[in-house]
Amino acid sequence: MVYCATACGEAEQGESTEELTLASTWMRGMPMKKKLKLSTFQIGESPHRGQGLRIGVTRRPPRGVPKNRWVKDGYFDLWLPALAPSAGLLKRFKKHRYSDDPVVCSAFFDSYERELLATAVGRQNIDFLAQVAARTPVSIGCFCEDESRCHRSRLFMILQRHAPPA
Image (spheres, rainbow, N blue to C red):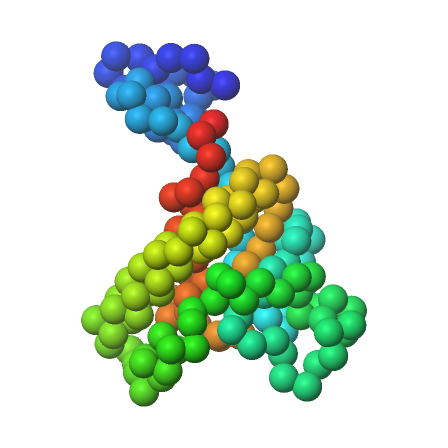
């Protein structure tokens, strides 16, 4: 635990640079955030040790898989479509779905975030999941192969920003 940082900002013996960053952030009057026990996964991958509660954040459940098989077959522990992009948003960007254009990806992510945080229910789900991830491991998953073009990467960042104070 870091109680103070040196005036020049160098880590004292035994302090990690992460601890120093947290300490200097606190010293500037910025509230420190708890580190979330949060990770992502692709639905269909076998569960890994330490993933904790695996939450599917997709618009639709796995096609042709009965609900009682989701956990047994390793898809996810809980399905939470409230954190998935809306059908309308997906439809709007469907023609660009596999685009490598960073402008299209950025527009999709920005639209998704605005949509998610526009309602009280969306904000409450984000705050709730951030609180849970501050206490126990949570993993958020989607079917997309390329995480860099998947909403779960933006959801991960949104949850990090909504982490409760330390």
